[in-house]
Image 1 (cartoon, rainbow, N blue to C red):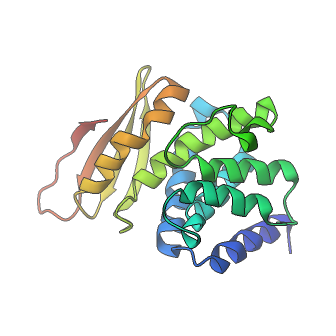
Image 2 (cartoon, rainbow, N blue to C red):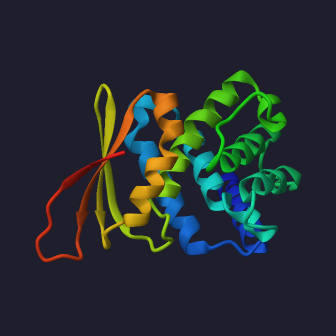
Length: 209
C-alpha cells in the first residue's frame, strides 16, 4: 500500500470513529479540492498541500462528537492528540489548524497550536483554511446541492460559477459570513454565479458576497 493510501485510510478511520457525516464531509472535500485547483494561480501551492486541505475537509466537523458548541476547537484537539502515524508532525499540525479555522475567528498568534507552526506553515494554514471556509459554506444545507464549480479570477474579486440542484439560500448566507478570511488573505471579494437546474429556464444571476 502506498504512503498516500495509508494516509487516506488513517484519515477515514479517524473520521468514522467519531461518526462523521460522510455525505457532507466528502462534498466539502470535493469542493475544497476543486476550489484549490481553480485558484492555484493565486495560492501557488502544490499537490501535497491539496491533499492536506482535503484531509482537513474530511475531519473538519469531527468535533461534533464532543459537542456542537466550539466543535472547530474540539476538532483541532482531537486531531492533534491522534497518533496518525502515516503523517509527519508538521503535516498533522497543518491539517489540525486548517480544520480548526473552518469557522469562527481567524488565525492569531495568540492561539498556541497556530503559534507553534513555522512561518511557512502558518502561511499554508491561512491559504488552505480560507478555501475550506468557502467549501464548507457551499454545502451549508448538507444537501450536496453543488454539482459543478469553476472560478474566474479577476484583479479585485473571484467569480465562483456554480451549477446547483437547489436555490442555495443557506449556502449564500453562509458564504456571506465565511468569505471573510479569503477576502483578507487574497485581497479579493467573492462573488457567486448560480445556475439552478431545478427550474425549466435557468439564467446565470450574479450574487455579490
